[in-house]
Length: 83
Image 1 (cartoon, rainbow, N blue to C red):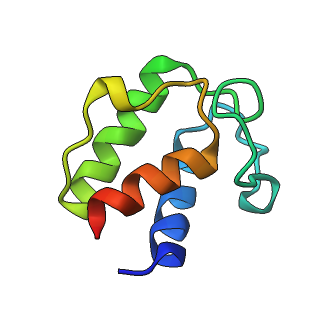
Image 2 (cartoon, one colour):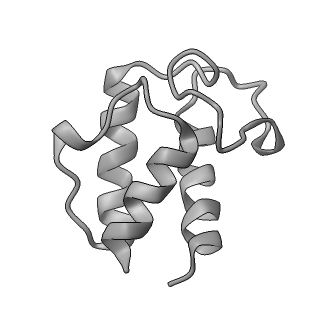
């Protein structure tokens, strides 16, 4: 699986979970902070991790993610586990 496929799916999941319904996928970059830029809290990020686990048949431990990470860091985490 290539990284762009992972990024695309994670973007879809993240936009769906974002509280800001006005948020467009094009507004999220790899440098976007999940908490401050996208508006996700720790529960939202946990739900995103769970969705990623289901979508990519992987296991992500709670200590591996937080609302303080960037979208790019999240994509990298999922990509490394999905390889």
